Length: 111
Image 1 (tube, rainbow, N blue to C red):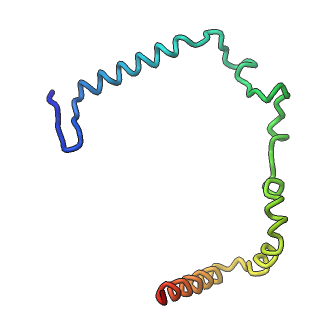
Image 2 (image 1 turned 45 degrees about the vertical axis):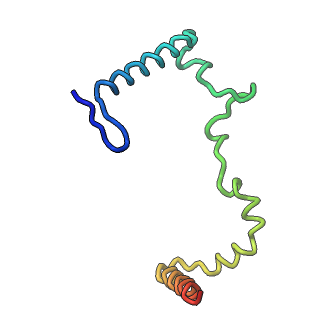
Image 3 (image 1 turned 135 degrees about the horizontal axis):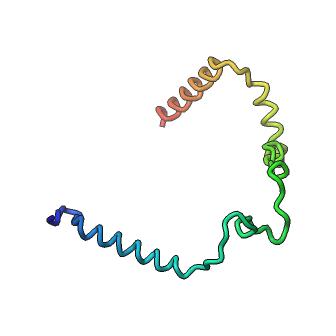
């Protein structure tokens, strides 16, 4: 094996294998200092919620309407206008896209 030298560094496969082996041994040694009393599937694996009991998945579900309530309430006037404009027809959206793009290109062309 030889060392491949380039303009930005070098590549030696044996050296990189040794670096990876030393790194693995270092991390494995650090892991060895951990506690061996850990048991999978017990209370140790549950999330700590400041002493509160963990709710069931059904109780944890947050609806998007509740999550964004403040945002949608503050922007209600804008949303009511946008809902009236919403037709569900793809050609309407393409028309709006083309019109906005034309206005932007016109503004950029004038500058």
